[in-house]
Length: 173
Image (cartoon, rainbow, N blue to C red):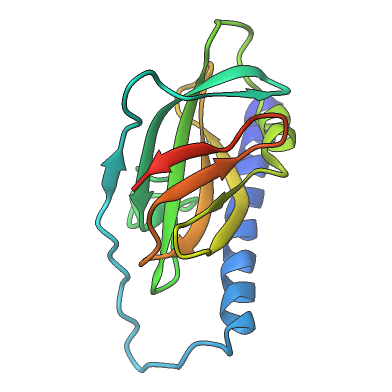
């Protein structure tokens, strides 16, 4: 039953990503049709917070940001050719993936709990663009690490993370 639930949650996340991408395109006047679609390639860059890792308070407890990276796919390490639950960001967009870990070991984090904890989380880039959290995946299974995703224009940089109950966190470039 657990694997069916995990699959359903993963499929729901992918559907949400596709719907959000289509809504974004529709809100910007739509995309021009091309006879041959070109794959979007956003260089995967890793931005790891410096000094002591930033912490945020959530309903999951204290979480430490372990990695921030930009990717052209969700989940960030998926294989577009080999995984059905792998989605690519629309052309001109990037996915900002923020990896977090519980500060204190506890029971494994459930995806439904993580989705509730980040349902009001968002990032704002230096250019003013804003994105709400669209997805949550485990970084390890079972475990206390997860990755949350935000879809932004590929040109966006200098990100701040906003999670209700915690001060804003500078995620860097």
